[in-house]
Image 1 (cartoon, rainbow, N blue to C red):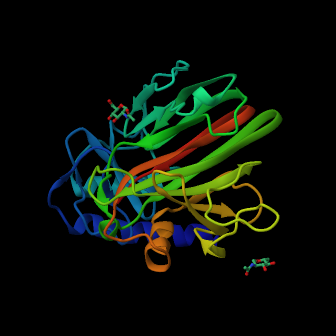
Image 2 (image 1 turned 90 degrees about the vertical axis):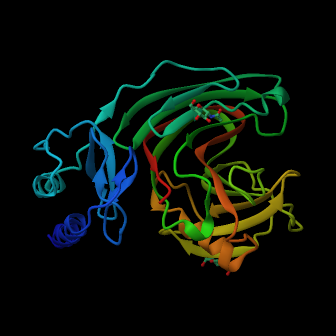
Image 3 (image 1 turned 90 degrees about the horizontal axis):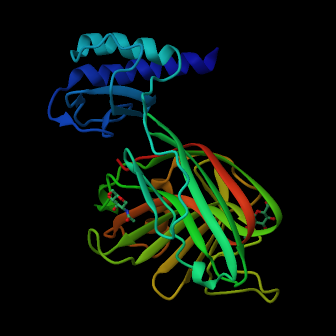
Amino acid sequence: MAGSRMFWSASIFALALFVSSTTAQVSVWGQCGGTGYTGATTCASGLVCTEQNEYYWQCLPGTASTTVGSTTSTSRTTTSSTTSASSPASTCLTVDTTSHCGQWDNITAGPYSLLLDQWGSGGASSGSDCASLTSLCGSTIAWTNTWTWTGGTGVKSFTDIMLNQGLNKQLTAIKSIPSTWTWSQSSTGTVVADVAYDLFTSATPGGSNAYEIMIWLANYNAGPISYTYGSDGSPTPVASNLSLGGHTWNLYYGSNGSNYVYSFLPTSGTITSFSADLNLFLQYLSTSQTLSSSQYLTTVQAGTEATSGSATLTTTAYSVVVN
Ligand SMILES: *[C@@H]1O[C@H](CO)[C@@H](O)[C@H](O)[C@H]1NC(C)=O
Ligand SMILES: *[C@@H]1O[C@H](CO)[C@@H](O)[C@H](O)[C@H]1NC(C)=O
């Protein structure tokens, strides 16, 4: 079928890039190939260059089941052709799958950390928030977060997966931020929450937060931070019907007292299967809004901002990398 023919020719193009350059070694989780990629293609010892998609090949620990087990470019070409014909090879790492409920618990797995981050729990009259990792295969992580909060009007927790690698790049130096996120949520009663990416930028690498960029995939009776509101009390977007990453968004802008906040909200429905380059959103903000491209990307997180109610968020597949 046409789709697989296109896939094949893109794969062959990627392979051509592969064998044409040999320079520095790429460390764990780093990019080692893909359409349009011009950097180093040799993985450090013990790592296998593995296709995640036609644009992104990554150095992963261990040896894929279909790998013929060699580091020469000739046999890797064989391996790559084999694996791209079926599903991409991915090696699963052992992760801590126990439940964690502490206010600031931090469970690290590969390039990610699961953060409980119950920063507003003091505003609740009662509640709890627990999360556990499910798996980490290749660069794809899965987790579950069950929370219940009563009382107060503010956010209680932002339990999330944080990326620990590839950060503190200036926006002008970022080539892409491919990400996928597949999730579902079950809840009882009325829930006030969002499911969202949360990115921060700073004027200096690792510096204090200047801008927060949220990309909401779901809005459960919550609302974005905004400087302006309509006569009906609803926030007024600063831009409407933006087409980015395969979906349509309204953009809101405001401050939460400590940093500026841009929030992209889908114009309709809930996006439970998302796959796009997050850099498109940053590029839009730096070309069409006030985000300066001299800012540094300091934080990339994805999770649920929980205000009240009871819900379980189950993520079956999440991945993100900053190239
Ligand atoms: C979580 O732990 C990892 C590994 O020790 C560390 O790199 C990261 O900075 C921690 N994150 C937070 C928010 O504490
Ligand atoms: C956005 O699109 C919707 C649906 O097509 C339309 O009704 C609305 O007027 C648009 N908003 C703006 C500000 O263009």
